[in-house]
Length: 415
Image (cartoon, rainbow, N blue to C red; front, side, top):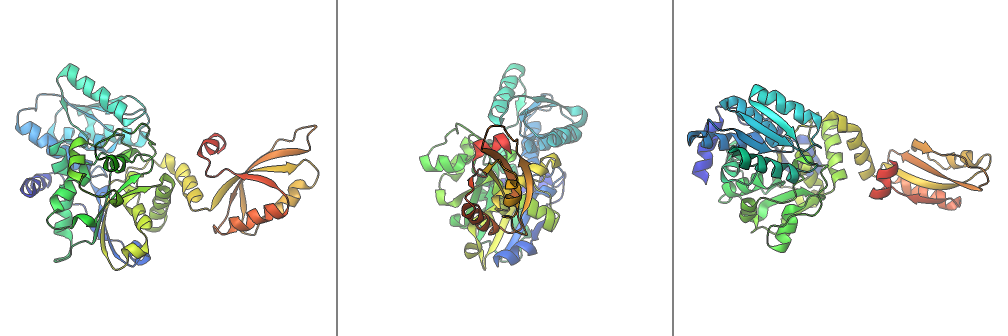
């Protein structure tokens, strides 16, 4: 594999230079480790997906496919890499994308592909979109460019590992390599390339809680299809890991796969934007979020490489990301309160709030012929330990209340 990947990397240099491998001082200081970020968000399409697409096209064209139409299905990043490569090789392409794809990714795909591509929006989830693309290929005789489950794609994604190894200081071998997982092409490629250098137990794989396709497949010993997927982390919201990729990863332990809460990923996105000025999409924030899950005790004194897989973030999503981040950090909570309908009741309630507590949302409609009314209230605070104090004040005042912050069904209706 190494020789083929090195050849693919040499060919890739005609398209763009190596992405940086950077020591992140902020994260290194936090965890007492030397933490490198492999910045795939700085590729021409702001993700590593361009690598696999280029390698697939290169090989297909060499074997006579230039006169055929290329087809792909993607939640965004594979589509952008595909479009960029279509224009590079000047071949026609059709991109199938889920209807739920962020508009920013759709617009960027059009920009990268120009006159060489057309876009079709189909289905709410990636797997529905992927099936539509396969049906199109079967009817038209086009060339399907898979997002992850193909040897040429895996080989292209493995060039991340080849670059990483060349960029590390001489003699340095990472104690941990943290890889985000969606369909598994990046992880299959990188672990395959580095297997003679990095010990198997030194890899960590991270998936969103709402799309644990690798974790569940490892637990059962065979590839499974998830019945339900949370598509918030759209770049990794895959219902079924690739068969070839699972075959490459099935020897790893389930303990090496970290499932990360979507709201925790939001904390990473906002922190990296505010502190480092780095724009990350949810899938691109997975490996950094994994650092918090591992914790300082598991990282201190170690050399760590975390692959930052993408930075195609739609800023229209920022209010939702900030909201999720604050809820995860216990800096914002929502309550339904049962309050007496009498003059002065609201004033009494406000007196329970601390100096650092702020009302972010308040909904109340007084109803006649009732002694009590229900209030929806959102409270922000500066420190999470303020909420236990506030709840104690509610209890002492005899207020009946329900904390609905973590009740996803109820919260989605009212927040």
